[in-house]
Image 1 (spheres, rainbow, N blue to C red):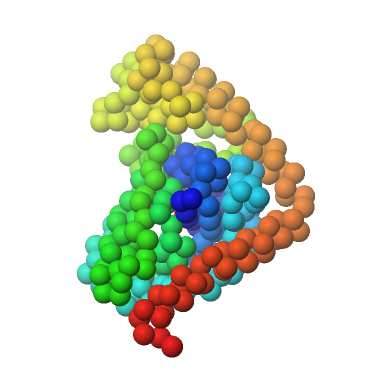
Image 2: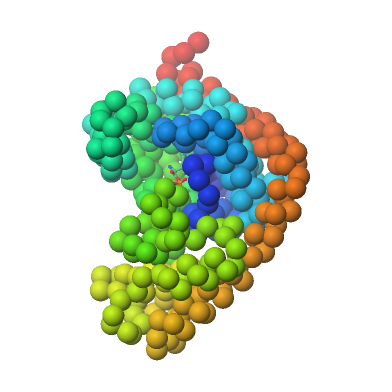
Length: 330
Ligand code: TYM
């Protein structure tokens, strides 16, 4: 049976990009692979966050993932900081990864530049730089062969593969070299108001981001206000019509229909938006209902995470041990 690992930062409310780019695939994979899904709170610390808010968001993330359909009987859901394999492995792999390859990570370059402009060099944390090593550690400590993620994680996955190959070259065939599992549709959902940037938890305005737990009326309003263009014809063409194409991409990822065929069924943006809002509300309202129920019994959520922690530890610690052993630690 193949082993699947993936993670999400509890840095804000989960949105449609997270759902279509990653979580939808997580639910599918729990049926056919030994799956580990991790709320990566240590990664969240790489950026400014209030401790109380981080705790709340960690639990809200667990609630959202369970509402989407992760089933603790079929997969292991846990919090990264509760299993010490991750930090141990991160140190070991930081002795394999190089300064040069980490400097080339586009996410580091973008984020460090933004922080630098805001507050100067002192605001760029070392953790922002070593972030991809911790991510490689997450994946490699579980011997994962598949990692379901959105398109923005491709470069981090490449680095993970390079580190695994280099490690195996030096110390023997111990680490599994993982493949990214990127969905054919929905791997890069764009902001509804600015379709040239990806939909993100840290977007400047909520209006361009559909949150998984948004109320139906809010979803309808956000889709209605989505930026289109003045061409007045519905085409799947990201270069010339990025706004409309993003709506078609979302439609396609939800319904599994070809975006060009969907485009051919509409003569104007109004009717496309109306039907898209309907399919989205249809898909997300059950999830929202289930989250409201789960929120009433947070003890149950803590219990699920506690069981997940034990299963994650049991699976990862022998792999970390064999890495320590191969590297000469007694
Ligand atoms: P994060 O928390 O930013 O996002 C979680 C998942 O959602 C995907 N995603 C998107 N997909 C499509 N369109 C979007 N607009 C969009 N925004 C986000 C991401 O690609 C991701 O799959 N570094 C990771 C967390 C991580 C991880 C790991 C992932 C840490 N360790 C090990 C996999 C394996 C991150 O920041 O994801």
